[in-house]
Length: 124
Image (cartoon, helix red, strand yellow):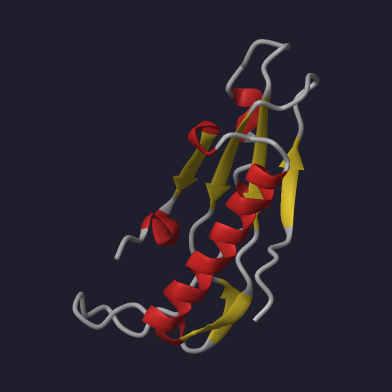
């Protein structure tokens, strides 16, 4: 499994000292949330890098096996057997690798924020 994620990166005009990693929901992509950066109306000299990764494309069982961007498969609507835990763990590794890339680039871990919508608000 490759842990690298395709992504949209919005760099600040000044060197980044903080990062927001924004994770989209089922069937969407990072492009769905990238327009939020200008809508935030941040000061021009902010130092926040925004990263909008794209989930891998995969078949989603609950959607008839349709291939779409998904962080993990959703097997059913049963709350006790809904998520593909192997897929959740693989997704977790990909996001951790992205966080580690930012730390290696000099961003302090306490200056990294994860935001998520829908499928990427999953917690185990």
